[in-house]
Structure formats: C-alpha cells, structure tokens
Length: 340
Ligand SMILES: Cc1cc2nc3c(=O)[nH]c(=O)nc-3n(C[C@H](O)[C@H](O)[C@H](O)COP(=O)(O)O)c2cc1C
Image (cartoon, rainbow, N blue to C red; front, side, top):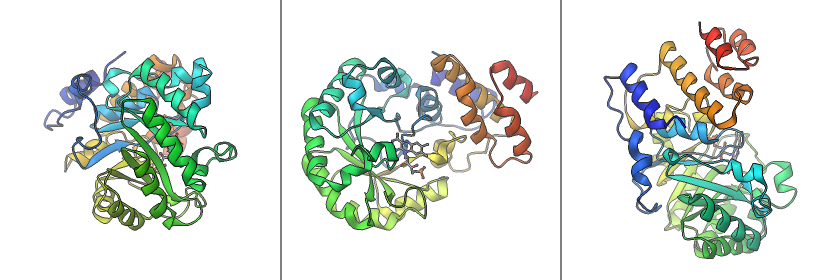
C-alpha cells in the first residue's frame, strides 16, 4: 500500500516545502509500539469522525497524512462480525499508517457486542473500540441500534460493561445530545462513564434533529463538567476558527470532524498550523490523485471515488460543469484527462 507518510513527504517536497507540518508522516509507524490511551493523548485532540461510505482506509490515510491525531473508521455491524461476514470484516481492515485508529461497531446485544469486539481486537489490534450510540438512520434505529440506545440507559451501560470486559483496548462511545431533548445527555453520559467508557464523543444534536439546526456546543460544556473522562465535541466544525470556538465554548478535550473533512482532508493541518495555505489548483490535483490511488489500492476501482471528487470541487467556480464530468470518472486516466 502507498503509505501516507510517503504521500505526505511528496506533497511537502513538491508543493509546500516552506511549511513545517510537524509529525504525521512517521507517527503511525512509531505508534505501533505504544499503547493508545485517551488520557495520555495530547490535547486538544483533532480527530476524524466516522462516516459510513467515506472513512475507509484511503480517506483515513489522507487525514492522518494531514495531521489528524486519531481516525475513526465507519461503523460495522456487531452481528455481521460475529457471523464472520467477509465483507464486514474486510471493512474493518486498516493500514498501520492509520494508527491511532478506532474501529466503531453498532449493535444492541451486550453479548454479541462483546464477541464482535473480541474478534476485531484479535484479528486487527485496533487502538480503540468505539460503540455507536448516535446513528439516527431509520434502518439502524428501527432495530434498536445506534441512537436508540439513548432511550435505554441501562442497556447502554450493560453494553459498555460487556465490551470493556471483552477487550484490553480503550472503549469509547459516540452519541448525541439525546433522543428528543438536548439535556438527556446530562443523565446519559454519566451512566456510560460509570459503566467504564474511557472517552465519549458527543454530536451536539438530538436524534430528533437529525442533521438539521445548529450543533449545541453549550450543552456539551454542561456535560463535560460532569465527567472525568475525555470528551470530544462534534458537529459543525468546518475550519480552524470553528474548531477553536467549539473547544472554547465546550471546554472539551478535543473534537471530531466529519463533513468538514470531506474534500478537505488538510483541515487537520489548517487547525494545527496557523496560516496554513489553502492548496492551489496544482496542489489540489496532486492531493486528489494521491487519494484516488489509495482508493484504487483499497477498492480496486474508482467509481466509488466519485462521491469524494464531488466534495473536492465543491464551491469552485464552474463546479457544476466539473461535477458533471467527475461523476462519470471510471479510472485514473479519466481523472487525469479532466485535470489536463
Ligand atoms: C455520510 C455520513 C455518514 C456517517 N456515518 C457515521 C458512522 O458510521 N458512525 C457514526 O458514529 N457517525 C456517523 N456519522 C455522523 C458523523 O460522524 C458526525 O457525528 C456528524 O456528521 C456531525 O459532525 P460534522 O458536523 O462534523 O459532520 C455520519 C455522518 C455522515 C454525514
């Protein structure tokens, strides 16, 4: 696999040689020998939030190469892991350069969740396991997975306890402010902490809100004050300014960035290095090509890369015409032709 460190070096050498980016090129390799700890990781943490269909190995490598402190892979079903579903197991596979990496699972049965995490730990040795208690998608909550667990704090606590007993790595939970009301988190989060969760990431919206309205960072401040474990704020962080503001308002230990990283994996470096220049069109082409190559390496095709391409050109003058071409890209030569 093309290693993220290598991409990073190339980008630096070729394009941004005047800027000292810092660490990420070799961090993954060094990390292998260290045990990940939510308490010890340098704060404030700037991490990549899990996004189904987007946070695959290729995208995580891109984000790590631009300085993401930690990356979460998209959720996988605990049931499917236990049934040893080949495709699901394949989805959880990662490259060493992605470390520190968190694998996220969803499910509702404590015993199955425990078995699934044991399988993942044994097979892949991730740096941490995260439990999805925030996904609002109908097919997920319909079977009492994801955000539904906020409606049954006892079950949520049982799941955390079972998973904690099953694995040695840290166990975190990603959740929302509540099912219906934003202050539900004030009672829910302490249950997770008492059950042994090592960290909690909170998307500042309720399940009822879905993705509408604005993330409520104030409520995350209120819940952070009640907890001893690290809290990661999530929702509506799209640049260095919103990151700074979110941390200030919430007092959180770090943040997870989701949509703000799509077509914009250098957001992590923007947050860490003030004055980081926005890539010009030549640099952007190089970033897209590197991402595309990693995508092919992982998925053996480029058709599923079209969704990333659309994000890369969002906001461009003439984006509509460009999008029309990008959504027809089948392989690298199509992509290169468009660039030319
Ligand atoms: C396309 C997409 C897929 C997502 N998949 C997951 C997922 O697998 N697990 C999860 O916990 N959250 C998932 N989320 C939620 C994000 O991780 C994040 O909580 C949410 O987008 C708010 O953060 P943002 O404003 O930075 O995007 C997903 C969000 C999007 C847009």
